[in-house]
Image 1 (tube, helix red, strand yellow):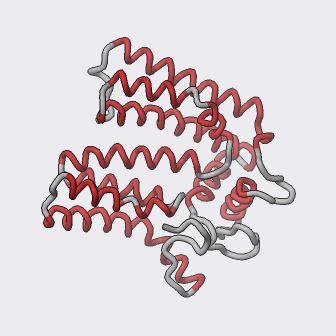
Image 2: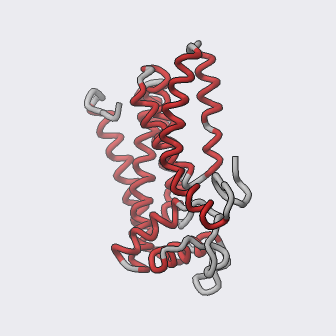
Length: 255
């Protein structure tokens, strides 16, 4: 599933070169441009990226998820990015954590290229997959986004992984793939709630592939259970703080 051992040496070398150059360029931009890539001001917190940084810092020090108002808990954003960023801040400190998070994003961007290859190979063939990787790698925003403190990079990786797992789940009809898909689906929703609507795509594919109703019910229950387990801490937290069931956020962008 994630192996390239059966690929020709030409494909292996080409893939390794593309991934290595891409990752090196991501690192170059991270260390060359640093915090000059911030869209907002770290003093006035006037944009999403700097608000995420403040949220992560307050979460690390006070254990409270905030956003627009640093004094009050929020349900305006999903918790994924602040928790990941606060993890890097805990290890490397405030500014070092931001740099560490950017390097982490460079790794995810490179792994996303690998997922593009695996998906392209699964759907078409290795040559088409390699071309897709090359075209994706030379698209400048893909390099630049590793510098940005937003949800794009992490969500892209999780979404590509979800698609790839679903290709196998649809083909193999094994619960393990649906469990894995449920895990990735739940994690992706912690960054971007619109992905919660993704099962509509799977339902269409089930109907196209003539799944039996019993099979659809079985895999729905399996995947939904995993999704609920992953999201339930967020739901419990929201209910305790706001005394209502808030499945995702109270802002725009819900599915």
